[in-house]
Image (cartoon, rainbow, N blue to C red; front, side):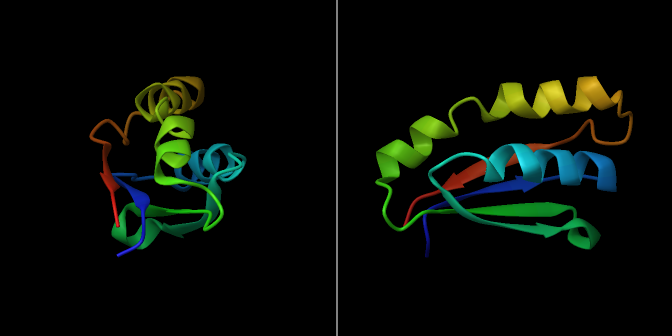
Length: 87
């Protein structure tokens, strides 16, 4: 299992794309797999980054998700959940 972040409950393309763009800009992120039809985004750690660096760079995830939903004024993505996977 790879070290990563799973974000679930994304209902709309606009939120999904915005979240993907904001997360991929982090230097510790290698790939973002956006699976809107399953309402899920997978974020994988750069192999050259430590788990600690990856987790630290994504520690603002709750705030990032809230800001995205508020800025887009989305009413369908209210039940977003996230989970860090350590591998």
